[in-house]
Image (cartoon, rainbow, N blue to C red):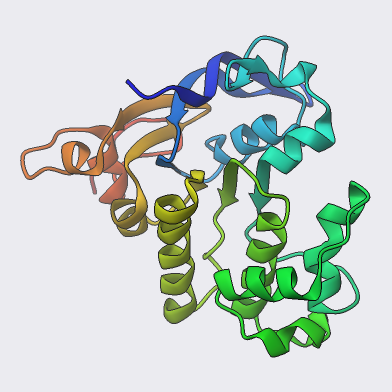
Amino acid sequence: MKKAIIEVKNLTFNRNGVTVLRDINLRVHHTETVCLLGPSGGGKSSLLRCINRLLEPPPRTVFIDGADIIELNVLALRRRAGMILQTPALFPGSVADNVNYGPQLHGKTLSPERIVGLLDRAGLHPEKAVQLADALSGGESQRVVIARALANEPDVLLLDEPTSALDPAATRHVEETMCHFRTHLGLTVLWVSHDVDQAKRVADRIYLLVDGRVVDEGTPGHLFREDSEHLAVAFARGWLGSDGKIVRS
């Protein structure tokens, strides 16, 4: 069995007096793409933020390569586990300034050639390096965010619905880019999505989160086989409520 690069053990997380994650256990292995599916408010984004320490999980619940993330330097952790959000958040300045941002936090400056190479990997023309970030389209902005994440040479990418605001062509490009990174760069990807078809296209395995709990898990082929009675199928058909109960109209 491949070594788990991300492991979550018995994670329960409370926020503002509300329990948003309940006894979560999951693994994401090296070079694996795992999708988190489930209704809105089910805890998917909170789980990603715990792994990146945008939310602080309890000790001994989240591990990267066996190390408790609470014991790691938070900036070093975020270099290893880069996050890409639903809405691209770019800083004022040029595209090159944005790609340079992470390395500069650690006292490094990328060469123009390195920046162009990262933009190329993310599917952007070299001429975009000098363009102002606020002049980009939504799809272009998301590609800059991807290049910026790659500039930190991460082991893991945490994706929080990165294509939900994009058109079909831009969505396809992001999916193909992530699959390419997994195959050719050896990246591990944990991907939050509401789109069942997307999860089928990109995921090696899927976890279904409902009301803060993992209620289903498996490969797309197993969960969605023709005779499947898995909860993932009920979710795909719109039968699964936010409380985990199946309601058929």
